[in-house]
Length: 291
Image (tube, rainbow, N blue to C red):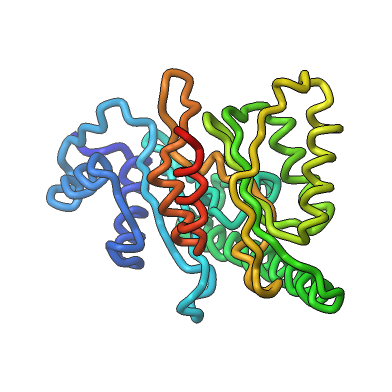
């Protein structure tokens, strides 16, 4: 029995994508690859999709194909097996905070049955890459302006690491990010057990920021429960030695485990820290945690 017209159209689209991108750019799960291989070998064969609602693949591309050092983005492409519906969305990259990522998702147009599927995907890719490029340029400009201001004022810039036995409440995590942005601090928040907060900026600004977190965001928490410890304070030689270009939460991009899925995979965190050039600092913080 031949595949349905809808499934056949999606397999043809998938075949087109494999011809446009290399095997290192376009990644197909084993199940999707098996279905496609069977279809290519014998188009009229009875394909077993075993109740799969969608065929999926991932496409990893540089945002700027002409820049060898460009940030990259991974697209998740989902093709319905019972209709011509197509979905494309980027995975949250490490250089976007939650609000930036959610805003990006909202700007992706929905697939219309009158759209040509391949054009919808290609146009979606270019639109998302353009939006990401704009976000990155804006972040770079903001941090450059901040560095110039700090240099002119002769301010000492530190990178400070804080350790929390536990960090879970969404509102309080958002406050950590938003309060930092208001005063020009950069860094990240990682929720879970344990939680980690890393901020870069003027030493006095960091101290005032932490005081505000405790007095405003944590005002409903008993004093003896406000457990946060400064583990490391590293002076930076110049403002342009910051490792981060903005303040963001990275919890959602780290694999988690445990009964309540609240323990982050520290090996993955360490990989990211090495990638961002702060692996040595992170190692010192973890070793000093007593965990």
